[in-house]
Image 1 (cartoon, rainbow, N blue to C red):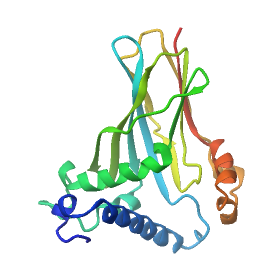
Image 2: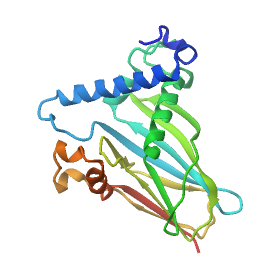
Image 3: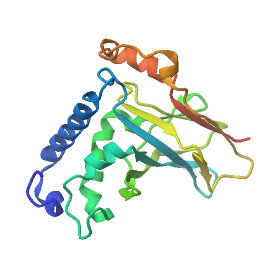
Image 4: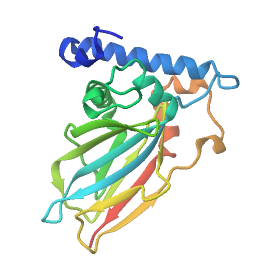
Length: 230
């Protein structure tokens, strides 16, 4: 493990080294998956199950969205491999804090794979608050809140969660994937889970080399939900 004792990684590893570690980690996961029979050209390489909460203030405005992203077991195993803990296989928030920080910092480049529009206009987010990782039943879950730069009041607020390169596959949880927290009683939630891209035919690896083409293709499979208020 880089920087010596993993319990001291946050204190002794500079940001550049942490970022380098994450990149190497992702490449390692990709290499293992690509080595599996029949998966040489596979997309995606990380599978993520999403549960989200739309958070309201007392005045009825929406302050942001709270995510819980649960990664597949293979990714979770790689992410926690080599971490030193008091009890083998048990990881506390403190144990996982450095990895959570690296995840959040890396997601910034991709706008946290989350888009919001209020009455048809983009509603930008500030950087995440209250982020942490937890590990249960061999699954690693990243929890974080994305606050809007300004509280939103709109008749219709739409959200999309998607990776335009389809490196990460996002799917909404089967049960209660989205909830409204503190919403006025008259506000209604509508959820549209993404279609399975593989049923539509998968483009080649060369196709994904073009960010614009890949983004247009992946957008049609975005997880979408909206809130409508009078």
